[in-house]
Amino acid sequence: MAYVAVKGGEQAIRNSHRLIAETRRGSPDVNELGLDQISEQLDLAVDRVMTEGSIYDRELAALALKQARGDTVEAVFLLRAYRTTLPRIATSEAVDTAAMAVRRRVSAIFKDIPGGQVLGPTYDYTHRLLDFALAAEGDPETAVLADEPLDQVVPRVIDVLDGEGIIEPEIPVPQDDVFDLTREPMSFPAGRDQRLQSLARADEGMLLGLAYSTMRGYGNAHPFVGEMRLGEILVEIVPEELGFPVAVAEVTVTECQMVNQFQGSETVPPQFSRGYGLAFGHCERKAMSMALVDRALRAPEFGESVRYPAQDEEFVLSHADNVEASGFVSHLKLPHYVDFQAEIQLVRQLRAERDAARTSTSENKEPAQ
Amino acid sequence: MENALPQGTGADTARADWIGILSRARADDVENLAAAHLADVDFEWLRAPHVGLVMVRGRAGGTGAQFNLGEMTVTRCSVRLPDGAVGHGYASGRSRRQAELAALLDARLQQHELQATLLEQVIEPLRKVESDRRLLASRKAAATKVEFFTMVRGDNLS
Image 1 (cartoon, rainbow over the protein chains, first blue to last red):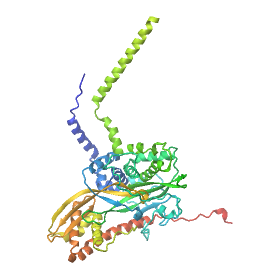
Image 2: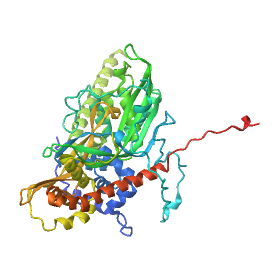
Image 3: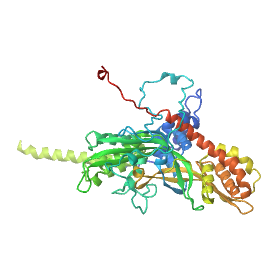
Image 4: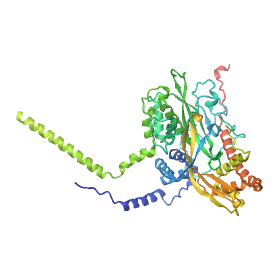
């Protein structure tokens, strides 16, 4: 039996790396991209890489995108790998999104909200027509400046407008510890902390498809956007050497509060239940999808039967991470010569047995003729 | 639940305020405003500048159970001046130089004879940069606020 050599290929791999480097650069007649250009002008791509790479650092995410030639999933992988080289300094206090310096804030359920409907930088009301003016260099239009800024405090819509308890309240629960996927393996049944962390890092495309499915008959969802907000929040830590809280950073986040009709149960009157989405940077599709899937995964809490993929936490959480998923799918490209040799032998044996069985059957039949 | 940037009163609060301002500022701004005040400072490292991660926590629905959202890069270091003053510096992101300047400033800001000058010439200008940036962003957002008006249907008019 032949044993297949699995060594070799070093020179081919080295040369492949050099070929990638040259391909990445593209035509030398074209200016090389700077990280600042990626960060400033492809900022939504950077935001997605930060969110799914699970590290807020614009420059690193821009570098990852440059290295991956714009491949989001590869860039996310690079960021996750880099993460393992850094020590954990601290865990922040829970951020207060009500204290956000708001740049966009809309509600689809209440028209008149304290602080108002603020569109901010949104594509929602654009025509989606290709703008050929962008193909030529030129100065863009400048933003309009209102005389007055927005209110300093823009409260969350649901917190202030639900006076009658018709929307489920979100109340802090006693937590000995908060689940951390970077330190503990996934386990089931998952708590909401594990689910939300997992969804926050999850692939946007996967979550979007799952979220869509819940509204198309695979989850009975009739959701509304209670509130979508974008802006900057402070991140506070309590350094051990200081012993008091310090707001060491300001980060941009997108927050989405979804509300969904709930028929009520023996213990709970009919009300609107909630799903929550929070993402680094400006990632509205991600935040909405996360909120919809969060709500779908809460089915058992509301006594709903778990019948569809989006409601099945083991299915969703085990498959929504694009680093794990692409790692597993991609490994199929690596040499499987030995595995396949074994499979070939098995198939040959099965074929031989099948042939033998047929021959003996026909031999048995012959005397009867 | 205040949207206002933290303002300090009391020793710890004042210190938390300036450490925070220095950490959130842009590295270039800290360099430009602080370097001249620290040119001749002698010091030893208690902890050399190093980049690490802070896990950022959120709450379900904004007010409910806590969960880990994701991490961010933060750089920190600690210094001791010859007179024994200890400074801790933080910098949002990965600038070791910013963390170093922040730690030196923290040490010097605790020295009463220097505090007023450093607050006035470094911390307050950095605070202004931050609040000006927020104000500008807020005014741009305010220009996109929807003004609803009620349509009057033609058939109701005689």
